[in-house]
Length: 475
Ligand code: ADP
Ligand code: MG
Image 1 (tube, helix red, strand yellow):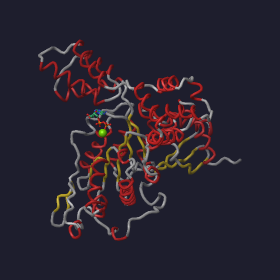
Image 2 (cartoon, rainbow, N blue to C red):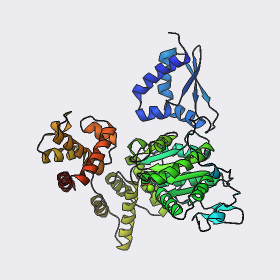
Image 3 (cartoon, rainbow, N blue to C red):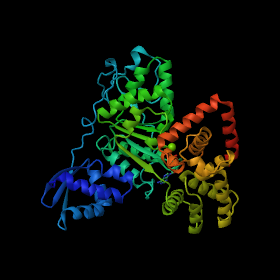
Image 4 (cartoon, protein in one colour):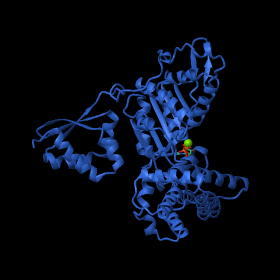
């Protein structure tokens, strides 16, 4: 076989794939195209400058090792940065809004179409003028990049956010989907991006809205018979930020309208930023066509911060509030509250308050009491192993039987119940639940959850199982 850019690059990819996280591989290597090979130099095309900088910063070593293996010690890598246009190079859009709504609108000069047919539409963000509409961005200036501290847990999401803010609609990160557990900074980061864009591009229309409010507005618009105006309004936004999109799950009408709005914005090079408490693969009851759009851009995870990051977040907070606190106390709090930055901040605030109300000195003793209260109040997460043990004990079988491949009905049901409770009581993804309960895939887990839901409402005996197990598992 002759050596081409493609074959060389494929070999490099095989090597890289074995050496880095699958998610990182998917994000940073799959989008690369091998374009040219001349002697010892390979040219690869990357989607943006940010992308190139990220590769240089994080993957240059592994790239070098891989390429040297292929082309020898004098191997060279040349990056070609693709012109960044965000639309026109994607799959064709198959669905369109009826032509009556398709009239072109410019953000700054909008004939308010809201008035002729439907006088009562009062979008809370529109302050109607004579010809211009001004849209309040709903951003919270206190959530900015400056006080969004960087750590390993958020580096990818934060950098992607910065890249999007410096070129909204002009990077391959469209949509940018930020996902992660409760209290890890999704809302903060989403605002920070919007605030930064407003700062750099004051003429752009930015709108932050929670998925819940979006849904409410949509329902109202249907009631008042001005759904089209609702769509119109969202189509003139340049940067649309929707927080907690998991809220749309099961709400097909709202998903449908969001799908149209999304397509319109994306097609016109507008930026969409979404947050969710789950990765796209774990989102339930979100239509496939919408999920596939979520995956077009970049999904970046916010993970639990490590100890150093927790300490620096706390110190930064104390500094901004002008409060001094001994290092050992800050570290004590950071050591004991791990998985939620909101709680971390809550503990420190309550510590400050306790000490100033009671005129007590802030001591380790006091810190212990406060932290204990916080940790106690947070429901402890049960483990999947524990769930499997409780379920198999309840049905008097051992865990191996529960996990086995058998199709015997009572064993299948026990397994499905274990999966159902694992989904309900832990933050584990469907895929991870499946792999821990008998090496099944995420679709099996999803199916199990649906089956349990169905049986609970149709089968009395089964409902009793669910109730008993719920009691046993409640912590
Ligand atoms: P989520 O939306 O993911 O539930 P939030 O964005 O509301 O979380 O964040 C919870 C709290 O933690 C907020 O007060 C936020 O300012 C703070 N926070 C989160 N991440 C960081 C960070 N990297 N640096 C500083 N503060 C942070
Ligand atoms: Mg939030």
